[in-house]
Length: 351
Image (cartoon, rainbow, N blue to C red; front, side, top):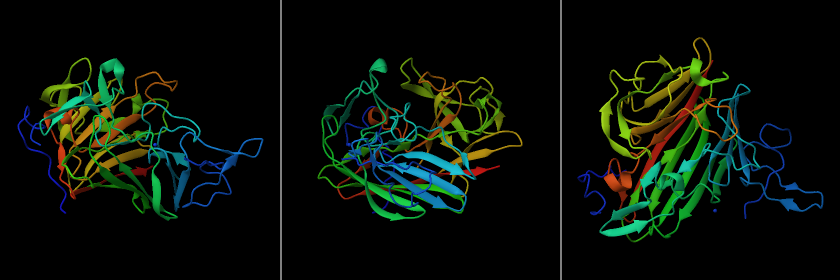
């Protein structure tokens, strides 16, 4: 079935109508692991297999690229090009913080108060960001994904999201990470395998870096002409043009001390791709590209706490919908029974 288009219902009526894990002992980049296969089990001093926080690690290799994908969350933990780590990352036996590399399903970003109405029924999801009274980044971050296809340079993982409080729908997901001659390509397929229509959105949370101590000396490009104004809980209150504001990165511009936790839309897709980029003048450049199913991107300059140096990287998050789309319908996809969505995004690195 063709990829459904975002719901076009009016803002207020948009929704009314309508995690055992085994372990690894050889971490990415060490000898003895066969790329394209899960690393071997680790053991404690008693010889008992030990479960790592992120489960099995799937190592991929192609030319000068290496990547690690985790069983827990089906997330991208590492991507190295010519020996340089491109992402902000964490150890295989660490939870990580700030959703490093996570897959955000069945919604990215926030649902205001964790509450929404769909097809006339009010739903209440768990408040995973209680400080802002929001449900943040979906329901699949801490679940085990199952490998269904694997080669040296790619892996495809699957997960079925069953009905639960606040999201009584059934979706089947497959995500493929593939190293290509052009970089890393990520393709998600989502299918409604239930009996009722389901609200849906997808997003991803890669933190990219360019080797500098901070991103302040880097140039940032975001090919978007519109940003979302927000309240003190980061819930959108409207849209505004980036023109003439410190949020305009349509042409490469020094990031400096600009703080971003900003959603953009009005992306410019050229030959089917919108490309956001971070680069050091005369040095490394990292691109985050997204296909035309991704018409939104969130930029976050990592100004928070969490034990990492502030502003070591930036998150450029491809999204299929706006923040709080379960309430506004902005970019929301409604999957009818049997209907599927498929979309791709990826990373490129030069320098």
